[in-house]
Image 1 (spheres, rainbow, N blue to C red):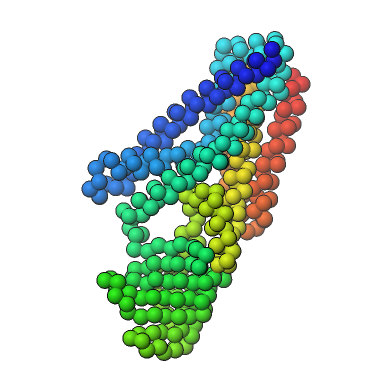
Image 2: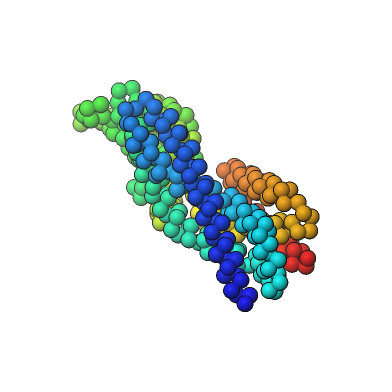
Length: 358
């Protein structure tokens, strides 16, 4: 009998989750549509392209707000069963507080795994297409960069010239073993520049002992100041949108970064965030469940609802704080990702023990 009621719990919870999901997804589409219309207001594209871009990006946004959706879903689910006095029925058939929370938590964890394996990979591929299309209408379309197994590649258009730049490695403020092919705007070859060491601290790169080839004649000079649209920070920022890469692309990119000598800390941190996602969702659901199961003792449903939302905001800012620590490299990324999770597990465990005693 208990198993039957637990199945009914799971069904009711998933129904509440889908309702909240549909609401948030609709809201995301509406807000994104206004944003894309504003972005393309000076382009003669009609309403088809803004709508298409909105649909491409909305799934990625939905994935990002999934923890908040699960929290709201749990609050909504318990509000409904409390209003219908279903909780009393569950308790009368022997379902303790822990037996009510366990199937909901297990379902959340399963949905979390699904969201990583299926939802994230689909949304990241759509995000990549979204960014690719949007780049065609961006003011930054004159330059781009990519990391491959052959190093860092940059296309840079400046001062009426197109520079195709390849670097074997990145070492702090320097690019190593750099080859620059300079073309005019008609893609006619102008010159070839080689340098073993290039300082990229600012937009005026300093090439050490470069070899310059023009009209099949090569000469060596001491130093050359080379103006670009890129510096160390901009190159770093170009690879920060990791949400457009699926799990397999992230793994490949990490290998390419290691070959290039580029820091893999942010990339590894992003991977660990994804690995911890099912656990994070489950914790959010457990915390919400504990709060709502306390309602019958203090008769303050509104208070617990508000408290649940405030706790979710607090958890968000705790994660944000630890993300800042990752970027500043003050603590290991493994500690910054899994540390808050372990702390929340401890708090949740204490809450589960206390709620089951009531």
